[in-house]
Length: 172
Image (tube, rainbow, N blue to C red; front, side, top):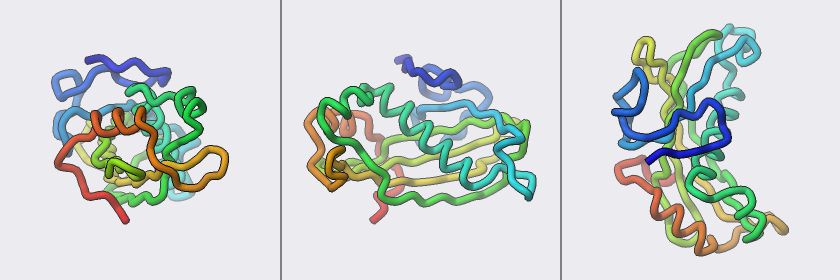
């Protein structure tokens, strides 16, 4: 299955057989975004700033969910969206300007009502190192009130259908 997104750096397809230069993902069938670290991504210490990692997590989250059919147009039509309620990031090694990275994500949980979770792994294929592992939890909110609300059936079908087993448990 090929995923078509508007993100130019998205690598179509899934599974290790279609993933260039890297095969040791934490979970099977990742959605992958290719990243090249720029000078603008670095901080005074000379490595990618933690704020940049958060932006990358958001970028791949939107690209992934939109590729599954949960587009912004669907969010507007239902009047609901999935908002991040918690993110936990483990920084394992530094990324530097010029590094070419692969960021993978998976939907790893859905409670059937309100919350979902997602897992991430950022790798540098040149040396095979995992630089970051992260988990985020999301809650369905009304676009109008910003208050929690039940997931619409369209979201439930997408979230349940795309969730993979074996991921980290949903964060509280």
